[in-house]
Image (tube, rainbow, N blue to C red; front, side):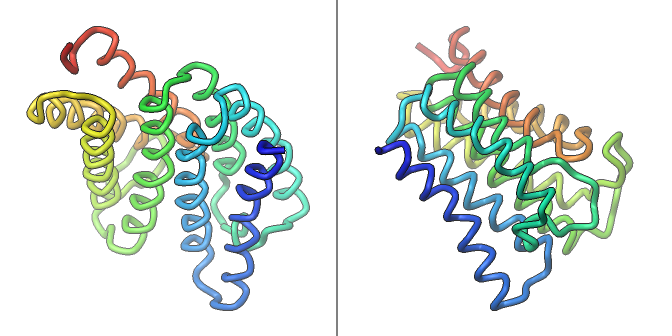
Length: 218
């Protein structure tokens, strides 16, 4: 029963965003990224109410659900963007993959928040203020967008590591900066929404690497 309630509540995020978009008529990309942020925060909270096996199942169930939604254009405000992207499908898939590979609260939450918050903010602010561009395999990227992604990822790393681990602040900052730099590079090169899968998996994996090999301290 708890699983059903959580799944329904998670799906309700997209319904609420759709209703608000119908009333307020914001730009399509803004609505899409709002749903992305809310879905990311919601997914990051899942380990506090579900087991990682249940989280993996929930993500797997949302993959076909999102695909059907995209095909039927059920949530026009979320799917209605001109860019060719499968990011909406990759995101629930990332939830499943991270839950299976990294059944640890810190690692899972870090990976999900990086893609849910850093990526969304980078896209929004990059499109709004990013006049200076650079070329990458993903096409035109803005320096502002990448800078926002980097800063947000550093802050997420610092806040989470301090919250979950007893580590010296200087070590937390150094590790968070290194992780953010690597993940910013990965995000800049990902195409057609695949960053929604690669970024969280890489984020959780890299943080796990630092933890396992004692780079965050004993």
